[in-house]
Image (cartoon, rainbow, N blue to C red):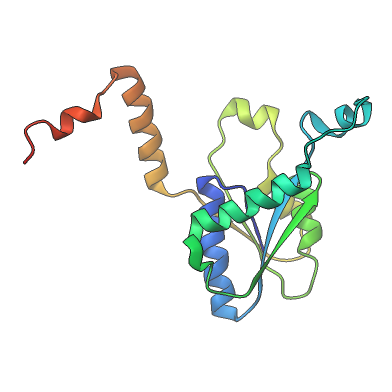
Length: 167
């Protein structure tokens, strides 16, 4: 079982979950949790019904994530997608409730402000899951890419200069 958001950390976790499913000959369950924009309370207060089907949009996002991770060939193991309404931590814990389940989740880097504003999904899963939880750390290359991106913003680097004078 793996959560899927399409971010680099969740893509790394998805690849690891596929490796585990292949190794154990298990079916992969890819879970995406969703909430209405601005939360449940704002959704209940809305006077007019929403014309956007958030569940369908989340299902489309899950399929796009699978495609981004594995291309048109898919993950190469039997899998099913699950789209559930709720906070990611509780949804993932509830989904991984069978004997023999393994919950695989991306353990992305979290800055101080982000840590204060958003609860940690990984911590929730580790504290409440009835099965083992495998937290996949982000790739070291992701940190280097972030650094290069920040540096590029400051230096206003023009990548076209790399091709000047090339045959």
